[in-house]
Length: 187
Length: 263
Ligand SMILES: [Cu+2]
Image 1 (cartoon, protein in one colour):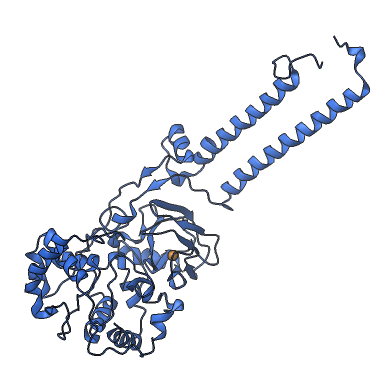
Image 2 (cartoon, chains in turn yellow, orange):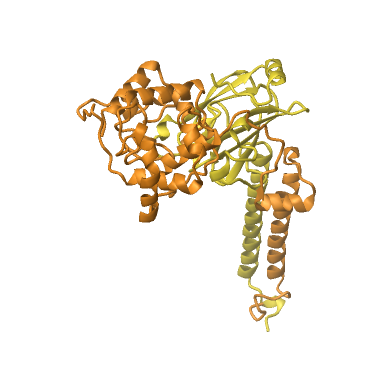
């Protein structure tokens, strides 16, 4: 039976070091959790809040990704929802029009294979996975044109697959939305 | 100390380290599964349980909202790459009988000079899809629509299987030495035009895209122009309109002549 007096100075040092290392590892874990939370909240990364599914083979038959429902829609509260699909080898709509400085919900999916969804000049960079809906809350700062290439190799015609994003002035968009329920800038 | 068991509640090291680890795990779970999801108003979560399910990735079908309905007929064919790839002899035989009425325009061997599409050797899924679209009105033709209207789903499958079974016959304008235009080989990546062959069979085949070799110049040009103008809209989710819109009149002319000269 060991007694207190039997403790060597070595044991006390070991216990102290052990405690410090344990504290350090807990702090590291805490910092990592905090970092993940911080970049999530500030949209440095945009983890998707929910998993929604859609059958890639029947997108054109019913639901929200039918041809006539694609494009930008303005809700009563002024927010905008954009719906698009990626397919071999184009995005529909080929040109997406959105207002500047407005909360926008970007909803897109793929009709065949995995495609990339990247809007140049912004931090929007995600994937369109067949079967799943990509849903991103975004906001464009200023009017301007952006290119939107598919950035995930999706087949032999991949290099020809890209779309455009046209960011227009808020009031100009509101006027357009008053005339038409789903907006695109395809000519 | 060395006599105490390591994994015991009486070992303070054990108790404290397990306690802190569990505490960090619970805290992270509360932050990740409840607090952060609830901070995102656009998710429109209905409560704590909804937040947990969403963050944990429980899949749900997309919320059905009031979608805008098309003011024209769209194709209702569900295309898959395996579609109609395994024809049986009975189907081909039935198709041969049914196809007699198609011979006036499409030729007794599925090939003709009438500027109607040559069907011999065409992918069965393509012939079936077009027949179906003529029947539903997604594609309109004064000549074809009445024919298709009278066909059953099985009739269309049989005819498609029969034409897929026939060997391809080159047109009278066969010229394999003709150089391929740039838009066929590389597309025009700066204008969202992939190479034609990446879907139409020369490099790869996308389900529903026809084989174009030996088709009449007049027919190919007419279809590309119809896609570009939006007069033809039975391509699912605009897959061909997106491309035809970007093509110049010169490119349309080049590809039409090129494909006519191909086997
Ligand atoms: Cu792609």
